[in-house]
Amino acid sequence: MSGFNKVVTSYEEALAGFTDNMTVMVGGFGLCGIPEGLIEQVNKLGSTGLTAISNNAGVDGFGLGKWLEKRQISTMIGSYVGENELFEKLLLSGEMEVILTPQGTLAEKIRAGGAGIPAFFTATGYGTQVADGKETREIDGRNYVLEPSLTADFALVKAWKADTMGNLIFRKTAMNFNPMMATAGKITVVEVEEIVEAGELDPNYIHTPGIYVQRVIKGSFEKRIEQRTIKPSTEKA
Amino acid sequence: MALTRDQIAMRVAQEIQDGYYVNLGIGIPTLVANYVPEDMDVMLQSENGLLGMGEFPTEETIDPDLINAGKQTVTAVTGAAYFSSAESFAMIRGGHVDLTVLGAFEVDQEGSIASWMIPGKLVKGMGGAMDLVAGAENIIVTMTHANKHGVSKILKKCTLPLTGANCIKRVITELAFMEIKDGAFHLLERAPGVSVEEIQALTEADLVIDGDIPEMQV
Image (cartoon, rainbow over all chains, first blue to last red; front, side, top):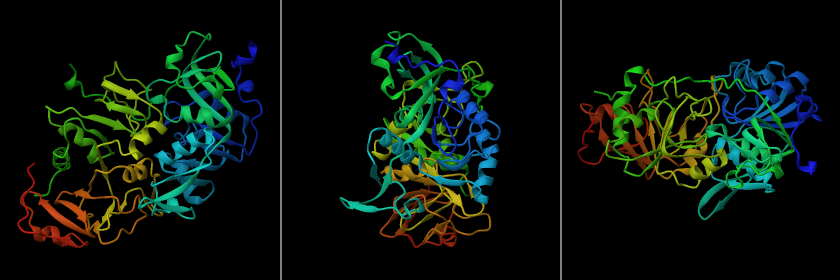
């Protein structure tokens, strides 16, 4: 019975086996839907030489920005540098290898990785530097680029709710890259806002089935907002 | 008179039809949402995983779990849906989005677009732009016709790293509405009070001017 209990109670346990030079996926879009406590724990562990796969790299001083500060990442695979000054500096200086990947291609590489598909053809990036050195093929008159899929030693995922068996539900746009990453980690660790007993989540509404999940931990989240935009008060009803 | 940013958005909005799913990029494209005709229903797609993006929230309704692709806090309209990034780009790549509006640094007469990096100067990453230009059948690019030194951005061949090759068909600038076909820009409309000669002078690309060119209605 306890064979399906995925719940761990400490961050040490959550990241047991995490070492230098690993490949790690980290969920989130900007600072929305990031596993804050797991990111913090990797920062604490001080692991280096990491290949990090994440759409963004946090902001200066928060999220993956902390890994950048400690120079824990040697290769970053993502789609957007954004307003992260340190990221841009490390990229331009060549101190960190950065593989900029179109967002949809990144999402599909991870989805394919988790689904056992080694590569796929996509029109995205054909004729651009993204296609440099990659196999291309014309299919029905259109040109495509062969993109290899991605998997990771660890996937660090943020979900809204989990049950003890690791079934997950995400919330609003905090879902983003998290469901695919959950499928693509050899060890998938999920940090959630709430853990409930098995049976309490309606099986009709599970986003990620527990088969993909190895460990679940209840976290507490700051949920920092990057661009706080409010409707002008004159428009208030 | 050259169009203002809002007037460019107004002209783009005239291309929207009732029942369209629309993806709007950052900058002028975002303004298009303000000019969707009252009698039309449009669902805005935000590539971070939201179909049915609404207006900005109030202090009371703000939710850090609900943002748009520009990472701004937003709301969701009635009938909205949330989904993963893979699902989102399946919609985009699969050609399910009816209209995509995005900005550019340069566009050329082969329909290629450069919008994501200026070597040595600006590295922000391409985000979803490469997927959007590759996936959408119906794309409108909004941009300025020339830089502040009067150097054209409507080119025979893009000089900056490409976002996509041979994928752009329509461009709206502060001066002109143009269509790209058969390896040239075709002038469809001009901004009110702007002459064909003025447009020609700021266009480095081959520009086809066929008959009388009407003024935009904005």
